[in-house]
Length: 382
Image (cartoon, rainbow, N blue to C red):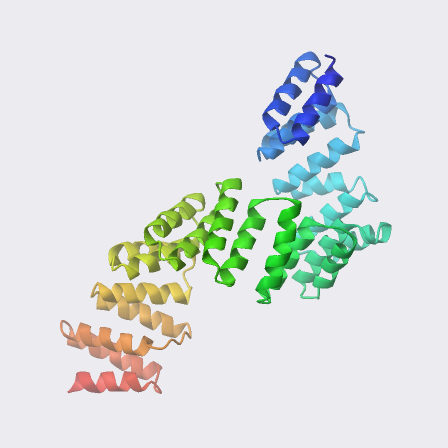
């Protein structure tokens, strides 16, 4: 076979999702002609599928150096640089094509990420002047409108009147979910999944089912999401939450740990795992996870409160009191908080009355309208 025939087979394999064969054929073509641009392009496409963006950029820089006038090589390189957050380099390439729809749209997204609203708006509007119904430009403008709190749902609906568009259905589902229109959100994400199955859409489907209290269906959606992307931490987190609703606590605990393994900065996973362990009276393990959550979000009052309650259960009243006062200083009001603080101060008084009185006096001084504070102080003075 000639190099061109080999590459024809390689692109067929790629389009059919057989990336391993596509890579083998691209490398075979390069062994016969080491500077063949389309062979390099195909190899870069395979690298992108594997999320090997640095490798893809190296391959594409080589292709662009050899064939600087081929637009498709330039634009694919720009998209890879964008994924690598190398925005200046990406923009430099996109701006070579001032009337290219995709270059304009992607430039708009870069400016949007940088919060350069006027530049982003200019890019999307210019693209829409070229083609007022171009879906990607409408999606970009919808993202911009959402960021600046302008109505954006009509733009998504405009796209869907003209075509079945996966991303428009997905974003519309997210918007309807935020509006608590869960059945409509589910309907739209199901449309998206008919067009293409991916981990993000299955995760969103799971959230819709969860909101509708269809726990079994939610669990299936999260499992499909994880099958498509075994590294998707959010799907593990949501799966664990659903397992808790199904009272599958052992599996839930294991799944929270999986979420943390995929994203060690996953506040919600540490927090939820801490709550689960607390409910099982495993206070020391609960403390460990709640402390990990608070390292990530030090002022999260829900996590602070959960930690304070867990510390209280270990009878470390001094730390618990400090945490409760910290929560009060953040302006958090929760039923039962004053009662818990009273219990801790009285508990401390059994071993250190002087310090307990200092805390009670401070409580009354800083929160003079709190009747529980005054009662606690009076009780200690008796």
